[in-house]
Image (tube, rainbow over all chains, first blue to last red; front, side, top):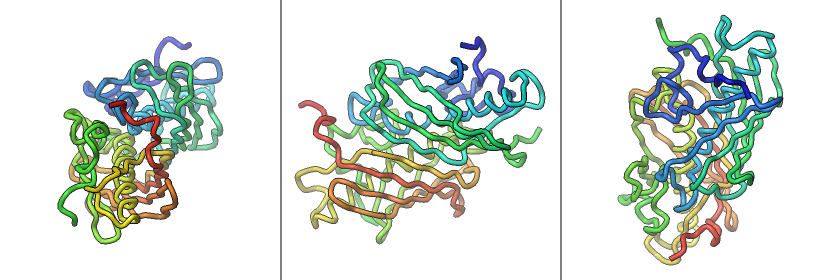
Amino acid sequence: MTERAFQDYYPDDVSHCYGCGRLNEKGHQIKSYWDGEETVTHYTPEPYHTAIPGYVYGGLIASLIDCHSTGTAAAAAYRAEGRGMDTEPALRFVTASLHVDFLAPTPIDGPLEIRGKIKEIKGKKVIIESTLSAGGKVCARGEVVAVKMPDAMKPKA
Amino acid sequence: MTERAFQDYYPDDVSHCYGCGRLNEKGHQIKSYWDGEETVTHYTPEPYHTAIPGYVYGGLIASLIDCHSTGTAAAAAYRAEGRGMDTEPALRFVTASLHVDFLAPTPIDGPLEIRGKIKEIKGKKVIIESTLSAGGKVCARGEVVAVKMPDAMKPKA
């Protein structure tokens, strides 16, 4: 795995996302890495991230898949340009669409692993397929269409 | 609109969902109601529910659409059976799949409105289409396939 997480390369002014921003003190602050041709992140739910007692609520699962996928999209785009994530111009992706299939209830009492694969990368769009596993069992599958952040969304300096 | 929210009829042992459980003190505790043939809920994001600064993060949007839709599914199922939500047996739905199209950045500085429509109701399955609006503008569209909670998921007494 790479040493520094994708999210740690995001410029400060776009690092406040509740799911993945390192500057959001109340957020999940997920950290995603390359692992060969796939990407991976781990997250341990809090006891209150309940759906039905004993299981993780779907919104957290969707959020983890979403943010891991936009991070994966950025990393894939840098790689496609043959440059490191510490080079300019910075690339940041947002979600155009998110799909999650909940295959089995996700146990809340342990770490979750989310793995991403690049399905397509073309122009400003990257499509990422992912799985979310608990204890080695795949509990959800995701597909995210990520697009390069429009200039209009960028925070004003 | 109806006076008591769908979620207020959920049995205590399945009322801990982070998105919609009235017994989850740390959760969003959304409240969904009939409004004619549609269902509606409102939620005001916290300042830390950020994506890019100024906008709501996608995981919250997904979570609100998800929980409003499972609530809508339950309400629709009771209605299809011609009985009130205060009658037995209790009906509770979980999410089989969730799809969200993010159409425009969702401003964080005000209440969000999520409206649901029953697209299909058949056997144990209900499909709900929804929109999420901010300031009267639709910012996201969702589709949820909800299924009656399997017995295996029910908390043990």
